[in-house]
Length: 187
Image (cartoon, rainbow, N blue to C red; front, side, top):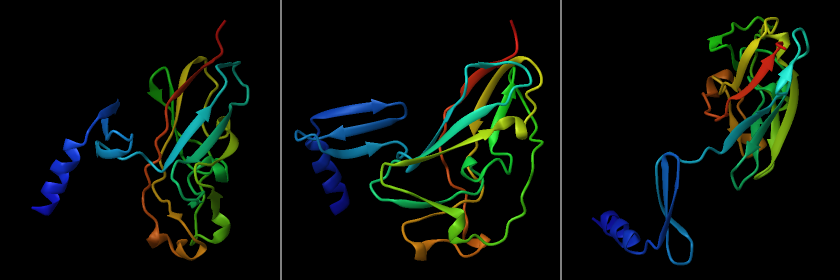
């Protein structure tokens, strides 16, 4: 009952709102966010920068950036991200709307260590460049789309002591990433 009353009191102070895709944010007169409906914003987001077009047979170098949108610094496990290089099927790559099979190296992993983590400051980011041609077939001309896949096994920690000491401590982490397009070959 107390929770319901607090909710109703908060609703009575709404002075403005903001809609962003599938999220509604309500603000009071002072501009302070008081209620949010919809999914929470992700602490980690990924972005990819790729050339708009390349010739057939060229390297397909993309810049991957992982951003920490939270107000606290985080250690992030680099496994299954380009921050460790291209060592697994970590991208959804499509040519003319048909998904390409990953053909690159696969790594068998032991327990994570501190060396497997990277520190990302609050509202900071880290980047790495990888050649997607090392794992995907870009030999045919066409329209390609690229999107980073969220890691199936990952981990974040605020301190060294919170870092995972075994694979059993790892979870799937959702890291949203937009799709980018590029053209290979053609006139």
